[in-house]
Amino acid sequence: ESIRSAMTIGRESINKYVEKKSLKRDVMEQELIEAQLQLEQLERDLERADLRSAVSGTVLHRHVSNKRMLSPGELLLEIGRMEQLEIEAEILSEDAVILQKGFAVDIVGPSIGPTPVAGTVERIEPQGFTKVLSLGVEQQRVRVIIRFQPDALQTLKERGRVLGADYRVRVRIYTGQHTNTLTVPRSALFRGSDGGWQVFTVRAGRADRLGVE
Image (cartoon, rainbow, N blue to C red):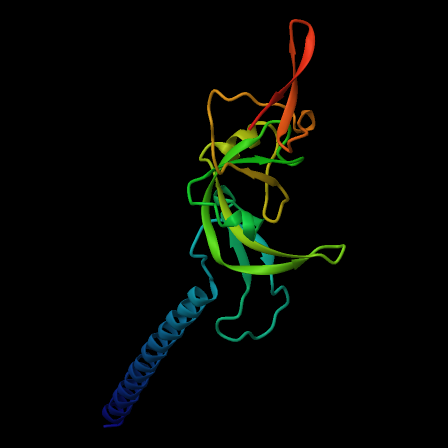
């Protein structure tokens, strides 16, 4: 009877021990499920923290550099595609009225070098603005957007000249072209007695005045 009682008590103890361990296993499995959910939430938060740009490009300016809370939509970075550089030219309004999209442009200046590169008028903005020069003279100007020809930037790169944002260049916009035309220096022209333009020409070893239009 003592042995039977001991065995009964032992069996009940073992069953309770197994039941306790089974309950602990269920608790641990639930804790594992909760930990996995927390991990998934953290991974989602990490993906949200990984900000991806809408375009591939170069960082031109960083507006925020320190760690702090930001409002939604606040500007962080300015990113530009350097292969899509455009020129913003400020043209006098009286000259801009005759410009049209597609006009040929020569892009010149010290940053370009001795040989110009080609461009095209892309857009003439409809809104002008007043610019005050250093001498206090006010001018009405219009912004004209000029696009580089497809191979222009590559040509500059091969010359060892790499343009960037806000670099300074100069432009010559062609509003008209004439072929088979004689050109003379502006300084060679002068007004005749009748008020018309004249120029000297050399004929048979002597200078003659010739009226020109």
